[in-house]
Amino acid sequence: MSGIRIAGLGKALPDRIVTNDDLSIVVDTSDEWIRTRTGIRERRIAGQNLPEILRTEQGPCDKDKPDETCTGLAARAAREALQDAGASPSDIGLVVAATMSPDFFSPSVACSVQEALGLPPGIPAFDVNAACSGFIYAMTVADAMMREMNIGCALVIGADAVTSLIDFADRGTCVLFGDGAGAAVVNMDEGCSFAGVLGAEGKRSALSIPVGGHMLMNGRDVFRFAVTVVPRVLEELETETGRSLDDIDQIVLHQANDRIIEHIRRKLALPEDKFFRNLQHYGNTCAASIPVALTEMKEQGLLGPGTRIFCVGFGAGLAWGGLYLEFQ
Image 1 (cartoon, rainbow, N blue to C red):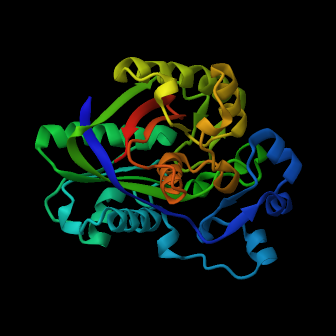
Image 2: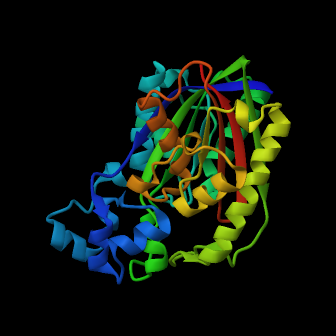
């Protein structure tokens, strides 16, 4: 179970805050309707993805902000993670970026970040698409590659500008999502415990995004899937690590919907303060969800030496995964 540790964390979010009241201008909804069903109060939306009516109502907005594309957000988060780790670009030996909303089919977000940050030429850099569990997959892949290839330091990113794939006439999806990126600098550390579990069950009807189309989601199916799979992943992490939920300081679930988190918390009979939540401010940021949450936890002093965390991601695929992290 020994392996990697997170040495630095960073996040990047678009400037424009879009509240529930703002969305009520765009689609038939209200602040109360959204809050009571999701827990979300506001989200960040990249300038180029804003509905035209919000640009009119809220004032001028730059449609072409390069730092608010998926790649731009990823690069900003990665730069912040490097700074937090006290690492230089030359230290990085691997880049794995998780996204389902890249700016280009090719080059990958990882390769674009490599160029933007001046990371060493010749290192492996690639994307993975596991939707909202993407960061979990990327961390697990990085762990395996670092061991196999004797790589001492890697950059793992979760980034999505997913509102580019949303139909703002569909209140069932447009109220849920926001844009953002989170990144982690990870080091090999045989004295630090790490574990990852992954799984998938192909079920396109629950949640999908056709090429050239908008997100399609069956909310009830996704809810049933999430509240079933998350307790199972937590149980697998307990078995894999020998740590019980009582031994864990914080549980960080993918920030999809507060009803999902609360249902799982009550099912497991755990205290509220064991579950970190920031979805009220950002909505569902897909692959960015968990690394953004971890970054905010560090900013709030919740990741001190010896802190033990279970992270669980779940989403389209259907795919899921969990991590055990220790902080020093």
